Amino acid sequence: MTLPRSTAKKRPSQPEGSDVQPQQFCFCPYPLHHSWTSRESVASFCLLILLIFAKPNIDTFDFFDLIWAVGITDFVLKYFTIGLKCFVLFQPKILLAFKSRGKLYLLIEELSQLFRALVPIQLWYRYIVGEDPSSSYLLGAMLIIIYSLCKSFDVCGRIAAIRKAVGILCSSQSYGMRASSQQCTEAGDVCAICQAEFRDPVALMCQHVFCEECLCLWFDRERTCPLCRSAVVETLRCWKDGTTSAHFQIY
Image (cartoon, rainbow, N blue to C red; front, side):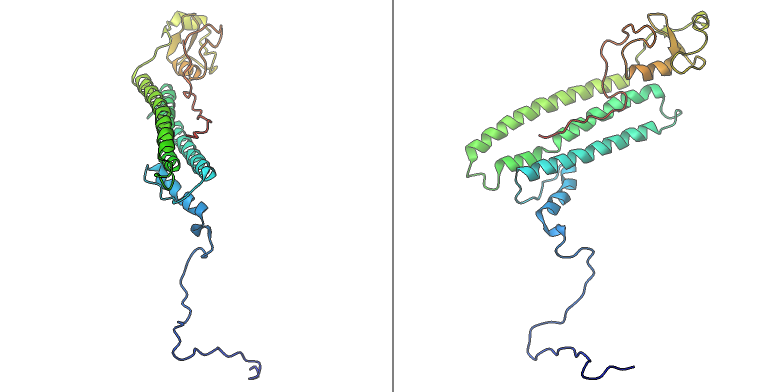
């Protein structure tokens, strides 16, 4: 069935001598009005650059764009840290003993906090200096000096924490003496933590006997004996239980 000539639509002809070219189609996964052309998408694309300490290629951004970029970057790094800790958690006992995992959690967390403290430095410098450094040179110089001093103290403290974490990882910590067979018998041959037979039993200063691995996991979270609550560890080391810092690295 054919349509009448009166209803058939004709393609408009191109006038002679015209510079208009026929429409050319090309594949593009996003339309031209997509957010790739907006300032927010440019800032999003620069997040990956910030993670490797490259120069941010954001032309202009205000304070809220700065806080948004710093917050999202810190959020990504937190999840990357959690992923590393999950990788350590899934390692079999043959490759990584349970008593060493808390030390690795501590080292990973301290390294993560140092990295998170270093990442936003370039953005803050770029924001403080501004587009035209000559317009507010004195104020910008003062703010950069104050920011650099605060950041230096923060970074030095985190480096000292990493050194302590490395020392803890390399050292072998003992919470007591190897328990004798008589001490195990008096304790009922059952560990009070795992409720199973003793494996490498260790007697604390309070003479309570537990498995060595159970004690290592226990003292990653606590500092007292599980039974009598007498102090065994002087200071409790945070992050050895696998937790991740929830604070927002704003500067």
